[in-house]
Image (tube, rainbow, N blue to C red; front, side, top):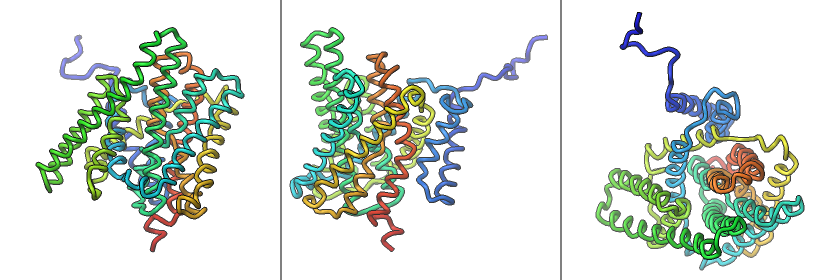
Length: 402
């Protein structure tokens, strides 16, 4: 007897999208439970459920296809990066140059400490430089989400947003230069080793500038039609993200720089719906779940001490650098302590830079890449809690102000 055509074949072949949808429901419910009963950030639930149910945990959810995972992460991160850039006023650096000095000292100290520690462990200089450049980045996804969720406002919050944006720029630039060095060591011609980072950085800057000009014209045309404007902006961000990937530019730099440019061109800040509406908010939640599903802690087995030292050294460098210039930049030691703690999280930017390096250099991916992935997973899970505690310590969340 032939199997009826109107019945599904057994065993069922379930699309990975179904598992992702079920994980979304579970993650949102767990996130709400954490907020209501433990006063913890929702992000912890999103990432935690993904890590628990994914291939690195209980294995209930099969690995997501790389193309689908990368598209979700790129789009959601692009939304958050543009949102971050649109909140940051670069003119503040002119009014208070010590903030720029603090950012440069914190990033330089992070790079130097991580690079020195890896060199002490016998890691090759160029590989140590790649890891150290990635370690500079503070997670914009976690920072923007926690600031939005906690409705934080104040000196520490503004500095956190500004320094996070600058950190991402430093991290991407130095990472691309370090990777170019790796290509040079692998036998790539000198001309292409030099031109590659210039093409990426110059092309990303040009695309960001074009985005900013187009944004201003559309904004002028649409005026106060907030809903329509949010839809168009969401589409523009998606277009810029995909175009940057197609042209082998940096979507991270393009969207962040576009946000900074549009904010700089306006004398007054313009408020947007969080994550540019409900569609963007869903993508952001899916991004954190996808990051959880991609979690890989296998580096802890063989390199537990190195992972622990990397996390500790990175956090110490950021905290001490901010404390060093606290008085000159105009904040108290308590505020500086809160700011230094809030700069610790790592997430999507570091993850994407690590994976991009692993694609070009598989030996890196199976060695230092796994160590770095373990650091990212730990700081992705604990990072939201640190940012929340830091903003409360600074007294810039509503419950502290009342």
